[in-house]
Length: 387
Image (cartoon, rainbow, N blue to C red; front, side):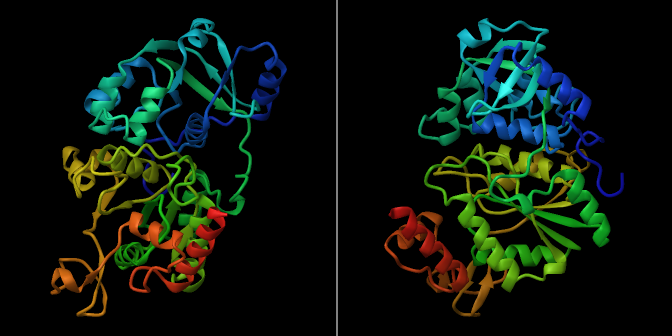
């Protein structure tokens, strides 16, 4: 395979072949069923398409505990977030290790199969403290953890079929396709950008700084489950479409969706996001201020500092660290403290919370914060959300 090697050396494919699919469908009414929530569904898809390579299924206990305690799989490979399938105890009791399990989505549609190799109990508080650095139930990741079932099911999975994304089919570019695209474009170095927020001028600035150094930019907004107060994925994607149309060199940028769900695990999720983009074929990954953070649970640059805990060659993707960007009134351009001579009073930067408050009041963020077309799109969307 040309380009950067996937994590672990080989891109995983757990999408059933036509023969396997026919076999699974024939068994479908006889198999015990487990209904997946949205996050488990997005994890199943990510495993199947190779986004979570080298994982071939939901983690067994030994791998799970090693990841929670040491940020590594049992084979020593860096891995920072447990990928698990939680169920309630009564469901686990009805399932036998060594059996095949039918996996249904939240609407009851048959979407995959699990070969149940193991079921095990786990310590929620221990996972919370290690992965999220807090056991505060107000943390959205911890809340999900504490509300989910107390038993994990483990084993290899198969996705029955890779359906087009219901909302963004033209932006569904899986790792096999993204790697092929990079190769066709002749890109040797590609920087990945992760976001769950609408694009603003600070994002644009660091993306374009990175683009000065590498051949191509892979804009990869996350469209899985996010917090209820995050801006909806369809709105964020429209904002990116505007930016692609008006403000980016289209021959050097690819916009694609990341089907994963947010954990809000801060530093650990920064590592996780980098590994996932490596699997998509990125050689570099942008790590900005408070990456994957929420509230005040993490230090401003903890998401960058955690990369020092690994040898560069074992992660196999280059983190590009950026400071918090703002609009500098003195130089009349975007900058960071590294490049701007301005005082604090001469800097314009707004938090996502403040921007959401402005939009709810029908006010547009200033052009120093957001491109006017993007601000108008956000304001229009927020007004409709209020109705």
